[in-house]
Length: 359
Image (cartoon, rainbow, N blue to C red; front, side, top):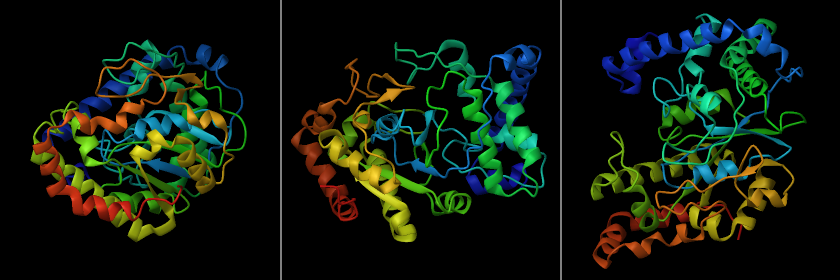
């Protein structure tokens, strides 16, 4: 697929395509910079070359709904490769499932899938967002990841789309050198990206690559969601505007229900408020859903085994699960609550009927 075709299909302007070219030039410079000392770096990398062929359990829904929390509850489970950051393999934007062309060169596949955030995290440490003061060591080599990816592709023979993703994740987890949970048999890769399955097309691409994959979506009561979302306004997500924000909530919640209808048991919907208030019940259910052992540390969010502060629009500074997140509606006035109920009540009632039966 050409850049112009992707621009049309993904709704991406030519200006954004030009920015993507600037991105490619930047990451290629990074690969060349690291390559000068690759042999020395390789000497202290992981010697175990594990082929990561497990399917992805993708956590995806609208922002401010608990996706980061859920992904970090899976961190450290011995049967899970937990992707440590927000998964950003989407191209040309993170919420668009990448349309790879198998006729192109393998290095091009890698450049499209490559997650730029690892460069800053490897240099300065991982942090949840630009406001967070908590940083974690993240020993990662982009050049090694590229090298390992190309090695896996060369050994794959007749290449399928799944082979490309297997090679990508195999290289990612091997290039992450201080990963405490690299070894052992894994049943799933868990990863969070907001909105990556928000269209029928993107959900279809995901399940085409991972017919054995799982899609877990978290639905948040719109009365709790809006106070958090309106503090999360960005250029592309203008959640501070009441109607614009709730239109997006409706659109994404309707997408959840379509995905559940289209893919049945491969899609699981959980309620944010239950994840906060009934964490044990939800995580025990999800453990059974994924066929992994339920362990008590699934009740505490961590990054590479270390407790991590909550990703919240409200300034708490606390680690663990913030129980007040299920009561943000208390910050609303009665008029706002009535408006939200009128606009979203029917759809919210419908999606609750599709929530998993863990209680």
